[in-house]
Length: 206
Image 1 (cartoon, rainbow, N blue to C red):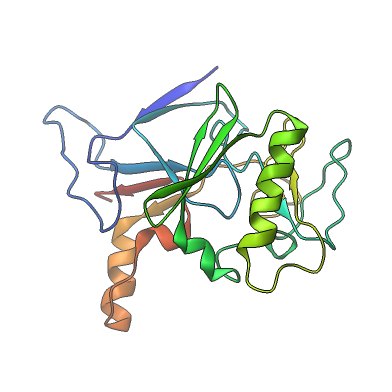
Image 2 (image 1 turned 180 degrees about the vertical axis):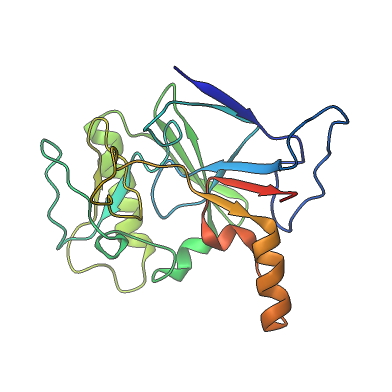
């Protein structure tokens, strides 16, 4: 069984958009934006709508990750690992220079830097993955302490949150109310970019 959710507002969240509210919509909340992150740590992809499956994350969300040389990950027996085991924007700030797109039908990753396409490779085959890995090995100043690796496991999502003891699944959809971000901005007296929280669904009206 699947449920579909759609974004009524403009699906670009550089700042919280003003979402439209259909007159006959009985729900007080309105979805302002939907995002997935096909490769953990890389840029978000906006979605106009998405089909949800109970107990699963958004399709293609955090499907891949870029593992550090010291990270031990077995794709045959995948287990949750904290984001510190992978390339991540919080630590590897230069990732902000990159914009990525992912074609799920071809498993094709496109990387742009300063508006120019610098790499387009398929993550479906070993040669394509090696070229993506080599790109990131060269991208980081000073290089990593060994080769970086693209990792994936069937049915696994590299989510940030560990599975709770009584949970029926380790996958989830992350939600953020834009009113909470507005309250935070008021509290600290500074603007906060909603996308820094890397959520899947941003909503407003509650």
